[in-house]
Image (cartoon, rainbow, N blue to C red):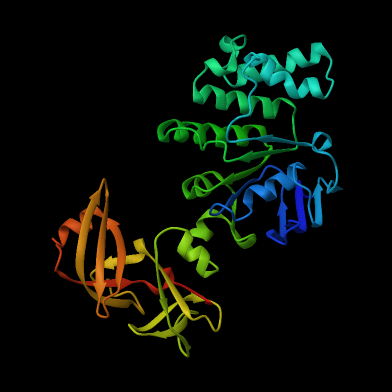
Length: 355
């Protein structure tokens, strides 16, 4: 199969021996929206720059549409990159900024004007075409950066935290526009972010990175509900992680571990010794689900935020965990700090992983 983008054991080691990225493998199909997610310094932006050609790879190979571009100069790669600071030219008009990539490629003026006019119209920027870019709002500058990246008709659009400088409300608006734009154009997007909501809400697949290593590559729902490593379980969502020992048993294809809180069953591989329980998997009270897991504790804090209710619960050994539920269920039980509580857990919502 021919992939839009393929990374084979791609790595980056700096002269001082620091490993920024280690043996990165990835296959991206045409039209996919893939997000690189991880904490600062995990290697996600370095990987994006290697794809763009702004950073030399130390080992491995990078292919775009089946062509090995590992050592191809950036300007000759069928990619376009958008940076967090937009990298617009303040002395240029909006039209000139958008046309810059076409000028570099030597596109004839008539064709250039046609392409720029079309993209100005697409991004509702026509009325601002002759204004200086630095005189416009953050949202407008973001659209200019996107327009400049797309006007050259790249095979792959690379986005390095492009929404990081926007305020929360504008960020949500641009997120929605970005996803609709990607679907309409059918262009492959590779998007770097440290914001979980962006990665999970926008992408078809998420690559979670830590210390230069790929921890997991999954669709957003699978990543959230079935973390594959302890790092992902701690980094994504709000999970309680309970350590135990592999045990025999488990009904309906589930596996079992013995823990200080009793046996816990869940979905996972043989030999797993950690149970990952999402905060929203805790039920207040019992539902008589087959194999239901029970944890007893005492409420130490309660918070209502919109339609979501949050409980902090202290277990018998003093450990505190977080439970999340609909505010109606929380109010129905009249919990307050000091109240005893029984948390029921459907074992199918539990993921068992290796430490």
